[in-house]
Length: 78
Image 1 (cartoon, one colour):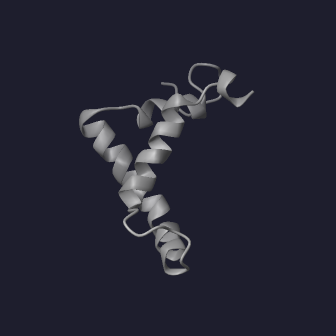
Image 2: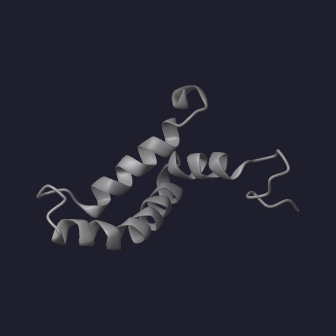
C-alpha cells in the first residue's frame, strides 16, 4: 500500500494538502481543526502584540489558509 505522502509521483505532498483543504463535510471540518491547532498559538501571540485587527479569529486565518492551499497551482506562482 502506498502512502498518500510518498514522492513517487502518485500524489505529491502539496496536492495532498490541497485536497484536504478543499474537502467538505467531516474531512473539511477535520482539516479546519488541524489548521486551527497549528496557527492558533501564533495568531494569539500576534493579537497580543497588536499585529492583528480586532475581530480576526483563528478560524478566519485557518479559512484563509485553506483557500490559498485550494487555489494554489504552478501557474498562480508565476
